[in-house]
Image (tube, rainbow, N blue to C red; front, side):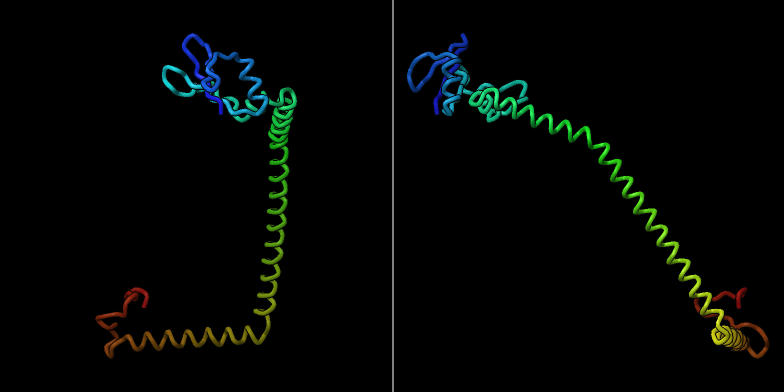
Length: 171
């Protein structure tokens, strides 16, 4: 790696060849693939680019390959812009597809609900099922009456203490 010191008067000094160099020479080295590091002589630090728009590897690539590198960058930017331009259209298509799927699922749910309702109606309308439901209702009424009688004392008064969850108004 070549180490070049940059002085306050903007002169560039190549430490490996112990001589002042020009920007054109540094450009030739970079084009030839050499690594070059430029340090501020006063601080010993690398000069930091203010804009940060292009990375150091990208700048080296532009110097080494000239117009071809710039064309590659432009093509990459063009592809990115095209992707960004088409994004709203693609998103709109996706939303439309999701809406159609949602509509189809809603239709399917309605069909399932209707089929289930019809099946329940068919079963509950069967004479044997209706007869069994009436028998269960009679059994429930008989159980409720028995529970009420058991709760009542011999004098017709409800017991002093009711089971948890029960109140006297609903017994």
